[in-house]
Image 1: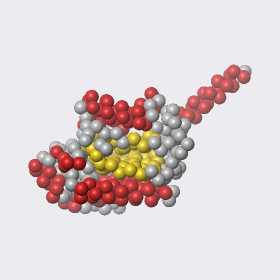
Image 2: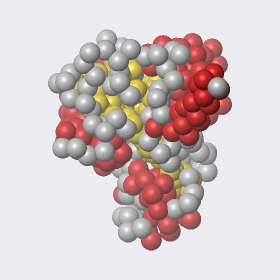
Image 3: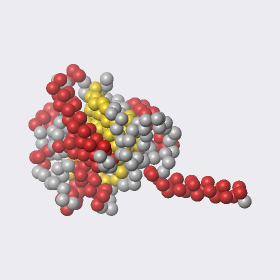
Image 4: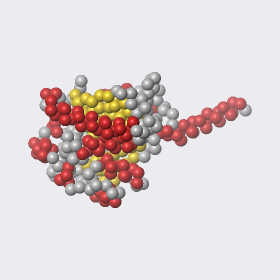
Length: 333
Ligand code: ASP
């Protein structure tokens, strides 16, 4: 009888943990350490052929200061008790509004010399997600993705349907020319390799222990119009689940879709017991390299560990923790 009740208890416990899903106890054996930060934010501004030789000091400073502004905006949300979702939104909007990055204003052109934008978001507590793809007029694509997640029964909306939905949600709609910059026009005309990068992304852990991730991009320069990359694909460009990690990716999207990169990192943590660093390093520096894909991710786990691996020359990236730890990097230092 005693034996039976123990078995029953175990079964009930298993069911509770499984039902808890992303809220449940982590299945990974990651060390928490003594100083689990209360909050963490990590961001990227794209990966690619970035080297000191190709960038002037002034350009480096421009990127560093915009990344810093994005980190500060997200940190202000987290330090005042805001959610990880609000923090990733705040950080991404700063980068979407900046012509420096390939997201929102300053996004790359398609082969038809227009801009088509993709974005996605995922809430690690609920595993709810939203995405927009191939939109040409939503000023801040990340807001479109959040609106799909929060105010529709869908996960992904595309093209004019997504724009109409966003307009109905009160989001700002702009002419396609709002996104255009001379630099990106030149890049597509002259097929400048170094101008491809600049996708933006953010991952955060908030003071409530919840993770969130979001990604926003213009895609690949000179892409065939209608092409959709990994950034709006949940599991490829973006993933968040409280029991493992939050991930935002950047790189050659077709490879990230075929290799389900963001989810693969979480799956390795969940099923193989890898730490965040082991899982993200393995996926980006082994599996993706073997597949021929280039790019990187920023990721954070529920203990506030940050990982930012990339297999390109450089990746605009940075993170800040409640402990005061902060770093902003561009090159492979
Ligand atoms: N991943 C994006 C895409 O393929 C591009 C990038 O991150 O640079 O659309």
